[in-house]
Every structure is written in structure tokens, then in C-alpha cells.
Length: 65
Image 1 (tube, rainbow, N blue to C red):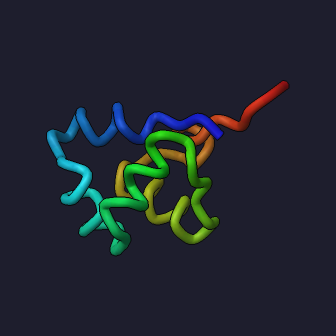
Image 2 (cartoon, rainbow, N blue to C red; image 1 turned 120 degrees about the vertical axis):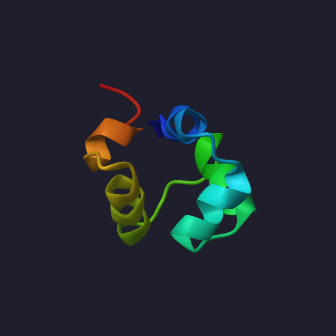
């Protein structure tokens, strides 16, 4: 699954560690999300969407048609 997480984080001037603290996850989790190696759980996706004040589908883009 593709996502805009890195762009959103960079737009706020946050490091991966700073974003991780706000989401209560590890920096490694943020890195895995940004590189598409890990798809978030639904609760985590909602936390991310709330933090950036966006809809989940505005952040995460499913693969394929």
C-alpha cells in the first residue's frame, strides 16, 4: 500500500522519531510505513489520520485498480 506519510511528516518538519512519539509507535514502525514494508492496523491508521486531520483514504492509497 502506498502512502503520503513521509510528505505529510516532512511538511510538519517532524523527524520519524517525533512522529513515532506522537503515534506511540517505534521509529522503525514509522520507517516501515513510509517505505511501504508495513501496512498499519486500522486503529493506527485512524490515529495517523486524526493527527494530520485527514481521512485515511487521503493518506493511504491501495495498490492496484
